[in-house]
Image (cartoon, rainbow, N blue to C red; front, side, top):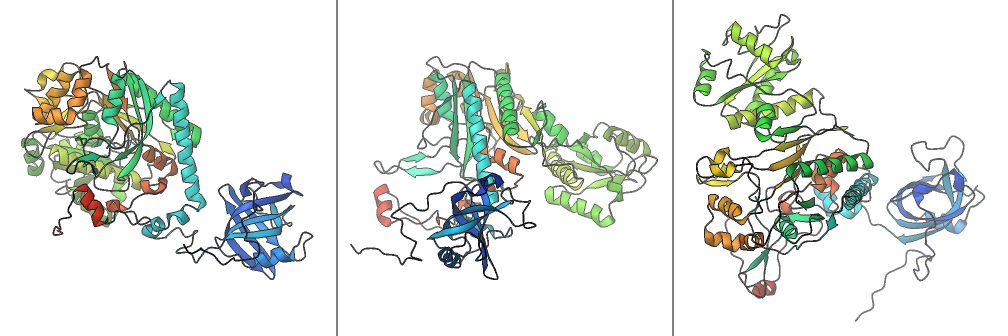
Length: 611
């Protein structure tokens, strides 16, 4: 085999001896180190030549320290000066020198190390750096370029800080749960395909072509089986995989703080997780957590906010005006109500001062969100409504009653959506968030958590049958099982979501632990006995062996860190994320595989026409 050689960049590039062994981190140097000879390692963040005096900002993960080679200084080394002249941006260096105070007036108060610098006596180029594909201090780099060269992107201090914060969050979670007597237990990655709300990623099984493993969408069944096993308190920092449409707060692979407990009620889970979230957030950052976390039923959240993921940093709740308009002469509202729809209003504080173009834009946005249109009137100084498209279509009594119920003040705009319950909620939820942002009511310094409870057990599927509304393993409330044949839509489950600033932060439920109840739920979803046995037979069998009552939840780790870093894209807090569509530009994955591998798996690629 031919021997590989590399041309040395200088006479000091031998790695036989660890002459580059650091004695202190760059970011730890202070004026207390003045006079000491130190060795620091890192990357050249910037290089400047000021008339024969070379300055290098040396960066490692702890911070930046300034290196100087100046022929007029006491510790000047000609050899080091020559080597420093070869340094360019992002060269990997080892620098030895004497810590000295910066010259008077040259201190940098923006750096923790800004009172000192290192007069270099030795410098070793550990590895040069080719021309960068983008400048690391450029905040406007194309995301694909950043992800393709993620190892460079992660050198930026802001990205290091995000991953360090993620580490601190995980450590705080572990410390909290260890103190609560949880066992950290790993569950398999190769498992069985089961319906859990999204498509599975499948892994072909070579030893028996035609059979597949699936990557777990969540450790749901395993953690329930651990409760059957008597573990009683389990948690895991768990990798999960879902083949679903990508967006800013989703990834095909993500991480959740998975936990399960035996012999507990819903209240036990909510109380523990609330304490955990508060403890973690307050230990790692400066965000204000509003506490205690309020609770809303699913129906209440939809009625008040139009969403089961409400942002409660601000009010501006929705107002149902159906009772005030039951006899209205305005045909649009009357027809909607007669057909079982809703007429709801939202207050836009100060909205009467919007220019006409701003009001038109509001209507355009409502149509983008799914409304047929947006009706509104403006509230004048006498708290009456004489202006706006709707002002002439309602009676004075109707407008007065609405203004009173909505709580409108002079100068407000009151907007209405009249449509089906689902469309009205969807549109007004989006408008409410838009208004909150425009009015500056969504401070990122505040984390406003709330619990959403009592989700429906079932929701209609596209085939006229029933599917699960939350997850298929949730225990119905009280005596609601008696409604399964007569009114399944009225059934409510012991489910709960934790929501923060409009994002789902965690999801869980009291689990079904009785095989007859679990079988009945699956049957209502249209599964045959054969399908139930094939997909869930192991679970039902386990439940027949003295399964305890149990409950659990899974806070999303990525979203928690995203909220703490003020990012709007979950990719910013994951070391090596995928782009939209699940593509990884760094590894160029997914990619084609060798035909021999496909043959071993009994697979044939069939070409399909792209839509």
